[in-house]
Amino acid sequence: MAARAWSLNRDIQTKRTAWKALQIHHKKMKEIHLLDLFAHDPVRGERMAAEGAGLYLDYSKNRITYQTLKLLIALAEESGLQGRIDAMFRGERVNITEKRPALHVALRAPKGTSAYVDGRNVVPQVHAVLDRMAHFGERVRTGEWKGYTGKRIRNVVNIGAGGSHLGPLLATQALRHYADPFLTFRFVASVDASAFAEAVRDLDPAETLFIISCKTFNTIDTMSNACTAREWLVSGLKTDKESVAKHLVAVSANVAEATQFGIATGNIFEFWDWVGGRYSLCSAVGLAAMLAIGEKRFGEMLDGFHQMDMHYLATPFQRNLPVLMGLLSIWYNDLFGAQSFAILPYEQYLERLPAYLQQLIMGSNGKHVTLIGTDVIQPTSPVCWGDSGANGQHSFFQLLHQGTRLVPCDFIAFAEPLRSYGRHQEMLMANAFAQTAALAFGKTAEQVKAEGTPDWLVPHRLFAGNRPSNTILAQQLTPESFGKLVALYEHSVHTQAVIWNINPFDQWGVELGQDLATTILPELQCSDDKPLQHDSSTSTLIRRYRSMRRRPEQPCDG
Ligand code: F6P
Image (cartoon, rainbow, N blue to C red; front, side, top):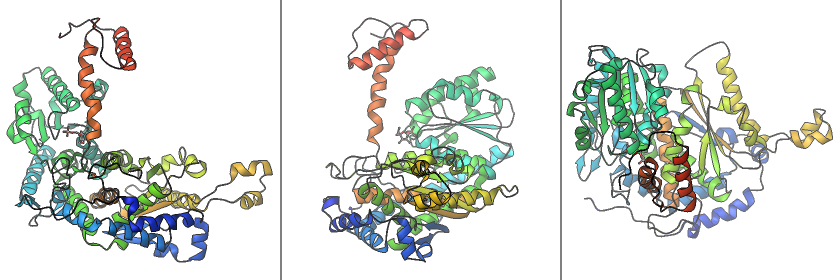
């Protein structure tokens, strides 16, 4: 194993020199309005913008000056950001609690390049799997791959949870414009039987392929749904377990378990333990997207990711999009005390992006201890939420404009639409740009009065403004720009993690509830009078559930 070339940061964020300077600077900045910042600098909108890998970021509507940027960048430098970026790309075991690299950047490294895990170049194995995915995808798309009865596959159902669900779901929906219209895609994540029932309600088993996507191949939700899928096939096709092999493929880092489940070796698409679940979209976990858009488009998506990877690795912080966005998030989260931020794509195909980013951002940075196990001093990940901007502006934007909370926003927009009807695109973009201006500059009492508003109504109708936002503008939503966008957020999350000195690559927080569920499950299934050992709330809920549930009693296991 290569020696670690980066050092575990033992210092405390609030003791760093740059941090102290930022705190002093913030005292002044929190009193300054964006109206004044723009009034004093007529070219602010042009200068406070950066372009990287073809994405344009306007960050001028943030409550910052050039001095703020200088201090934030000093903080990044003092926190050893470049060293940590380099270490991640070098395949070092940056996920220290799980003793693994976090080498998702290798998943999109072009053929012929290299990325090392324990001295071994993993790029060839990455491409070997991509080639198998492409070949399989082609067979399904052309109809060469047939189901048990000889019918071709028309429906693909991805069964997976967390990263094994949200990534393929997002990519398949975001890139639907480029997808084969012959194929229908459904996604089942929850163990709630309604999820499975709804996904298959109008599907013919003879034409349906299930992708069981599970890194560990032991996530209980996924495995329960996988068993139900197999039973649905067996009963729908009136055959036995073995005969439905053509309808079940697996994506996993645990090939042994997938084989044990009964998936033929040739139908297993592998990935590796150095790929974290929420960073796995570019691995075999993206198989549904490969089936939807085909090898060429999938390759373009990987290329988009790779371009943003290279931008993050090699661009000076002043012009580095993920670094700038990460530092701005730190500015609001840690200095202004903002509790959340909103992601607002002005592109219907990206409707599920906020849900995907919730896992990426909060799963990565929702942590309370530093890399050395001490409590973090500052709040870590903000709560991230959002929806299609065009829909949100008729609902929750009220709070963004006039609520009492500071909610920084990311607006995501595209110059070229994918669908063109009349003036729709210009209306959409006019709304996106107008919202950023309204949030930033608001409307003063004088302006409201000048419109003839009676005095009593003025406070209700004024907009304080000074509400910050970023605008990310790309040419068009393509597989390539989609890849750049997702990688932009991945690396912004990494930048923030480095400042907080936390590990963004583990997720111990999801375990406790799942472990407890294992204990509670048999208690729900039986109805004896044995005392329950939980707290009084949980025990009462279990008893109440048992008395409300209408089903035949089952014997207790002992
Ligand atoms: O529940 C959290 C988690 O561990 C995620 O990190 C992961 O993406 C998801 O579960 C699914 O894991 P698996 O792919 O092993 O089913």
